[in-house]
Amino acid sequence: MKLFNTLTQSLEEFVPIENTVRIYVCGVTPYDTTHLGHAFTYVSFDTLMRYLEHIGYGINYVQNVTDIDDDILRKAPQMGLTWDELGRREIERFLNDMDSLNVRRPTVYARATEEIPYIIELIEKLLNVGHAYVNEGCVFYSVTQDAEFGSLARAIGLKDYNAMLTIANDRGNYPEDKRKKDPLDFVLWQAQAPGEPAWESPWGPGRPGWHIECSSMSMHFLGQQIDIHGGGADLAFPHHTCEIAQSEHATGLTPFSRVWMHTGMVYQEGEKMSKSLGNLTLVRNLLKEYSSDAIRIVLQSHHYRYPWECFPEDLKIAAETADLFKQVRTLIGDTLQGEDQMLRNRFKASMNNDLNTPEALLLLRHAAKEALTTSNLSLGSEVLRLTAVLGLSA
Ligand SMILES: [Zn+2]
Image (cartoon, rainbow, N blue to C red; front, side, top):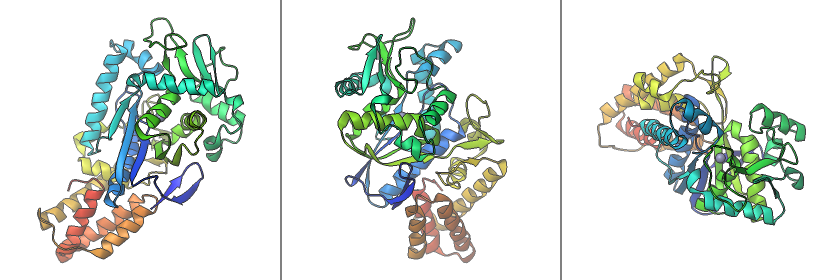
């Protein structure tokens, strides 16, 4: 199977470390409701997991939840909740939405607040090798100490220090902090601010920075090196760029992840779907009108790597496709009979080509129509075997 590696900007033959694939996908920060952009990311990786299993791999899949961060602390009081009440409520909602979309739960669903001792250990390693410094109860990663910093950022076109700094500032990821030696340095341990929750550490009470959580959880649950690290395209910089720097310097091992995979952003009326813009298509609302299969199909009709815009027309077509697969189920019943090697091979060829689900779905649509018009039971049975690999429930 070939997968596109964001870090090398090329299609590479996928060769995992062992037969059980170690994969880490950055999860949500639970303070708002699941929208179509989230669904695209997690359905894409769910499809990848299902397909890897289908071709014979084992799966060890870790997803995290950033259950403490600035946004949660800001949002919770506005909603009359404590930060951990808001976190718990939104995690529950997110998991329910994912269950509704037939997204299988990861092997480990890791929470930042349960990871603190491991995070502290990792920060201590970075201090020991001289890649971090302490200032007034905070610990920062020192970018100027790191000549290789930014390999992933450069791969996605951020050519130099200034380009990185502009994006970091734009995204609000790097609030000005006089305690930093360099504006691009990022926080590993944030000293407690008045009224904020805090955990004890060798540098005083505080909480972990965002980037270090993922490095820590990835290493803790999957080992120092993994096969696939993924997330939305907006995570490539700074989040994943910072993860690579701190992980590889803490362990001395390269690469931290063999493949970096990023899902395209979902747009609505020409704008990126985002909480701040308020142009969200919520999964919960879509489920009132469309079946889970129809929603999965609309997502899988777009290649995971590219940005796309969701139009109502696409949902209608997806619903028709879901209906077509249902008709095949009615034709075949519960007992599958016969095979169609040609369809299976073509499906495999599409999926082996960087998880080309749009092409795979098109094949299955054509095959479903043919099976229905000719009452071809072998072809129909094969269609149902393969829609199951895509996580469809027809
Ligand atoms: Zn992450």
